[in-house]
Image (tube, rainbow, N blue to C red; front, side, top):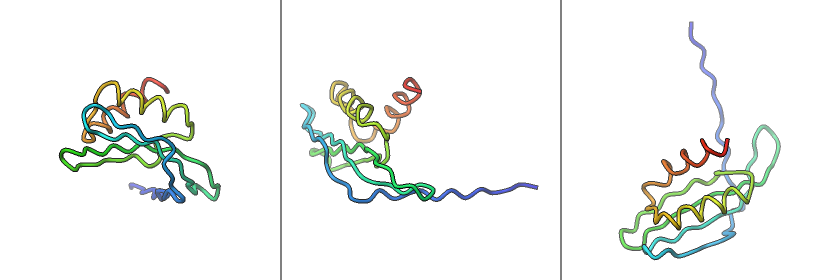
Length: 100
């Protein structure tokens, strides 16, 4: 018999842009700050957004980290590597696998 565990994904509220940088590849990288309610506790979370002004594509990870230093460091890595919005999830996985 199999059991199914349902986990409610928290929604980020009160989102504001903490930092925004335009890369040479016409992509805007943003670090956002917001609040998320997980298991009854409200905590601050930091997210990453990338918007490509050439193609119009955008991707975001609204709850990337609870640590601002990790979010800013990751955004700096995206900028230096000229990462397009389509690739931020794979870069995030690589970044978090090293930092954990």
